[in-house]
Amino acid sequence: MRVSGENVLVIHDGSPEALVSCLICPDPGQVVAWFHPFVSSARNSRMNAAKRQVDLLGLDSLITPGGNETAAGERQGGQYLETLMLIQAVSAATARGCGKVIWPIRNGEDLDLASDAADRALLISRLITIDSPMGASPVRIETPLLDLSLEQMLELAGDLDAPLEASWWCQRDGSTPCGGCSACTQWRTAIARTKVTTTAVGTA
Image 1 (tube, rainbow, N blue to C red):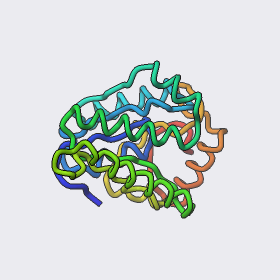
Image 2 (cartoon, helix red, strand yellow; image 1 turned 60 degrees about the vertical axis):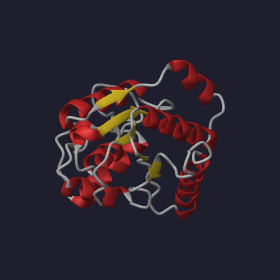
Image 3 (tube, rainbow, N blue to C red; image 1 turned 120 degrees about the horizontal axis):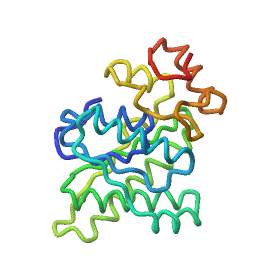
Image 4 (spheres, rainbow, N blue to C red; image 1 turned 90 degrees about the vertical axis):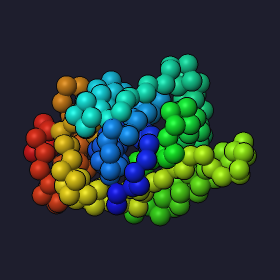
């Protein structure tokens, strides 16, 4: 599932999905991590995880959008945020000379949500061709993890030797995952099923 070798912007939130999306790129030095401006839970911990991943993987850089646009978008909520996020990510990718945006969204077996996300990425890719001189999209949006279950994503992480302890999946801020929220419960169950190992606290 490796993506082609070119400058890539990964929409980042410190999650295991973002980590895996960075690792499927052939050259980490060509990957720009763009911190998702509309992160609604555990923002501080997710930001710290994103910084750890940039340092650990040797990514090109981490871009952190400003707070004003974040506040304005959060008042709208829902799928509007996904659209706004993707447009902003494409703008950032264009400014950095990236030919591709990787959106690490993962809807697993929810085919309706997966279809909506795929359509959204495609439509925005087409929308940005309007101002392209040759009528071709200057930036492509890809969703390589879209239809994977959590267990499948973890198996891929294992194949890539992903340092999962450098990611954040918990719904709460803290020095370690809380172990009690729904995300931690799902994570712990998936780890047990796949036998993927991680040194992160809260997975036992």
